[in-house]
Image 1 (spheres, one colour):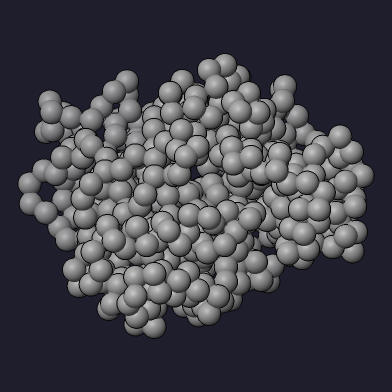
Image 2 (image 1 turned 180 degrees about the horizontal axis):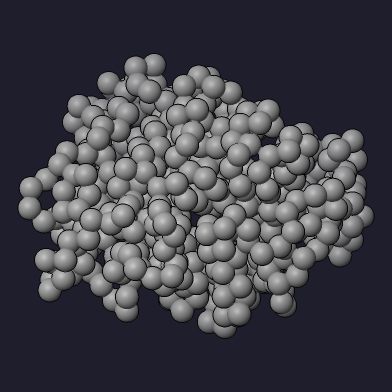
Length: 497
C-alpha cells in the first residue's frame, strides 16, 4: 500500500517512490504529481537509444508543474485552433503525471491491493501531442476513485525514426518503460499494480494495439481501451522511408549517428517539411510503428488475431464522422468530385463493389464525404470489428465496442476524430475542449461515457453486453446512450467479399 509521506502535508501531498520522495499539489481531495521522470533524459549519449532507468534523487522533488514535452511543432492551421498542443521546454521529456484520490488509502473505493489505475497514452500522428494537453486533466478520474497516469514519449524522428545503428520503435519502448515505472511505483499513490488499464486515442490507440501484441509489454496491464485507432505497423523497409526522406532534405546519411549531430531545431524543420502533407487518409510521408522483430515480432493485427493478449479485457470504438477532422477544415469534402473520388479510391485499393455499396447507402452525400467515410471505415471501424470477431472466435477475455456519435456544431465537424476526448475525461468545461465541442456540449453524455470508462477500469465491464454474434455497439449520442446491434451492417459486410 502507499508509502504516504505525512510530514509533507503542510506543503502539499507527499509520497515515496523507488527513486525518491515527491511533493505534489492537493485540491478538493485529489492529489496531483506532475512532471515525474520515469526514464533519463534522452539526450547526449542516450539520444536515439532505448530509455534508461531514471536516477534516484536526494531530498524532496517538487512535482507541481508539467514536465518537458517531446520535441515537436504545433498542428498546422486550421487544426491548431481545434487541437491545443502546449509545449514545455526542457530535455527531460520522458516524464508522467499522476492524479490520485488523497489520502492514498482508506475509503470504500480501495480494494485490498489498491485502487484501479488508468494510464493514458496521447495521440497526435506520432509527431504531436503531450500529457500536458488540458483536455487530458485527470482530476475527474481521481474524483471517481481511479489513479490516473498520463505519459509523454518521444515523437517523430526521435521516437519513430528507423536507423541501421539504433533500436526501432523508441517511442514504444518509452511507453513500455513508463508502464514498468507504473508497475513498480503506483502503490505509492494508492494504485493497484495488478489492476492497470492502458487507454489511448488515435496514435495512442495504435500504440496500445502494438503494446497488446508486444512480448515486451506482457503483464504490464490487465485491461485496454482503444479509441479511434487500430492495429497498424509497417515493415522496417517501409517505415524507414520517412527517415530517408528527412535525411535527404538535411543532406546527411540516414543514420542515428548523423542525425544526432543535427541541431534539434533544424531537424524539426526538416521533419515538418517532409510530413506536413501527411494525412491519415490522403497520406504521404508519415511515421509508423515498425515490425522490428523485437518490440513487434510481426504485424500487431496478425499477432492479436492469433491470440496475443487473449487474457486482456478490451474496450474499443470509433466516432461516427472520424474523417471530418481531416477533410472539413482543409476543404477536401468540397473539392473532391466524382472523378477525384474514384481516383483516390483506386489509389487506396478500394474495390468498386465496396464503393458502390457506400454510394447507394449515402445518396445525398457529396463524393468527398463518401470518400471520407470509406477511408475512415477502412482505417478504423472495419479493423476493430475484425479484431472483435477474432477475439470472439478465440474465446478470449471480454471485448466491448462503442461508437461516439454526438455531432459538434463547430465547423460542421459533427462526430469527428478526437471529439470524444472531453467526454471521456469529463472536461467539457475547459476552453481547450470547447474549441472542438462548442460551448453547449451535453454534460449528461460526458457523465455517462466517463462513468463507463471508470467502470471498465474497476471491474472490466463498462455497463453493456460484451461482443457476440449480434454485434452489439454502445452508441454515445446523439441523444441518450443506447445499445445498437450491427450498426451500418450493409456497409460493413461489403468488406467481406
